[in-house]
Length: 187
Image (cartoon, rainbow, N blue to C red; front, side, top):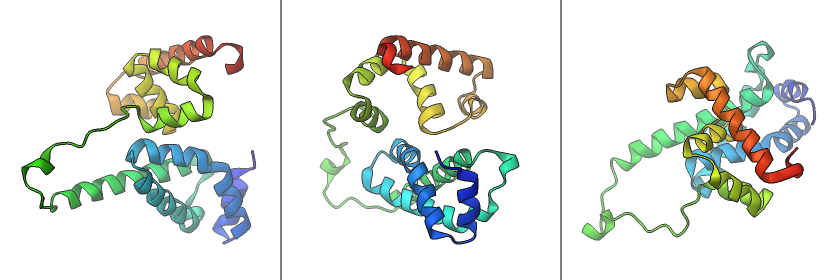
């Protein structure tokens, strides 16, 4: 993996090549965060673009003493997605239905799996999806927050009003279970 801190520094100096390398190195995690939060491919694409425009313009504000480049970019992506969700919620207040009462029924969804589960299944194959399906919903939620959204254990604990030790224990047990479930290839 390239030195993201250096790439951010060069991006702050408007180096397009450095920005391209930074994007290539961080896009998968950022895309997973966008899909997880927005649950819609087109909204996720727009948020991803907005987030990397912010990275380009705000790269000079990155401070190494406050965290890793990955965490900084993940937080910027997450905040961009949350801003988009808030904006969509405000816009939805002003939408008037033109189709009568039938439009109030929620649309039928053919596939109930979450975007992160679909992405992981495609990348890892069916065994990963099967193993994730065996975890308790609480463990899946904590894993997604920590490994997909890039939140620290402290952030996960604070958002879910759980003791930090409990969060760490549940995540660790889930990771160990996934290793056992997937076998030697998971190491």
